[in-house]
Image 1 (cartoon, rainbow, N blue to C red):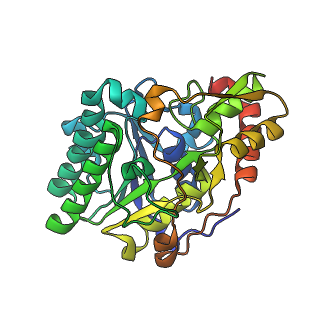
Image 2 (image 1 turned 45 degrees about the vertical axis):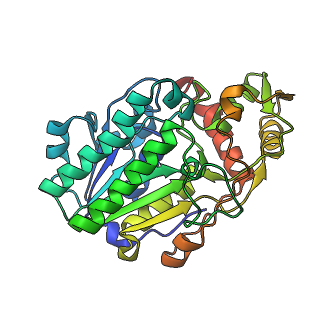
Length: 333
């Protein structure tokens, strides 16, 4: 579904950290098509995260790529200067890995973001800065759909550090007047996601398994409900929030607003791909400890402040992701 993005994008200077990943590169492509003045993509290209230069192959000559880390203060104090909007998407992406190495997670997902904010405070206070948080910040879900005022009870270092970073964004807005926006994102998926492992974007991983004729494992009875948001819709939400002044200083839950059981999601994947199968297995201990319960996102707040609406059904999104994977699989696994 094509979305008419804000006309105020034209001529703006934009910085995207984590810019070679699925979400960052999708935002970049949309901004380039909408006439942004300049687009700089910053990525540390740390394994096993999702940086992939192929994600921008067809716009490579129209964006600037800088291989740098948000934890590098000297780099960031230069890169944030003169930018109108900063999509600060860089991060450690696995909640399970955060359990094994909480220091690394805190270093990237909290300290790295603090570094960017402090550089903005010192060198470019007028920049709009957006943060990519997670639905996992809520912990155990008390009731659906989940609105912004649901209690935050993080159950992993990943969720804890995302919450600490969100609080820091709000602090820099309230104390220093920096126009920040914080997202708590449901389960993203779509073209240009890494498909080498299952630590990020479960739908993409399942599509790969189905394409290879393998067996997809479903924990428990598969009735657990999740909200899956297609990356094109998510990128639009980021752009609308960035270029809508009423959103600055706010926190938003962002998803499709539709809940789907795990079992039904897997069935759509298998029907779309045409190969593969599934089986039910007991919950692994490492997942049982962090399972949050059913989750459906209440998107009323962002829909009330912007013209954004998610326009891609789960079946449409999985079909588009599969088609992209068939065409470009050599670049993703």
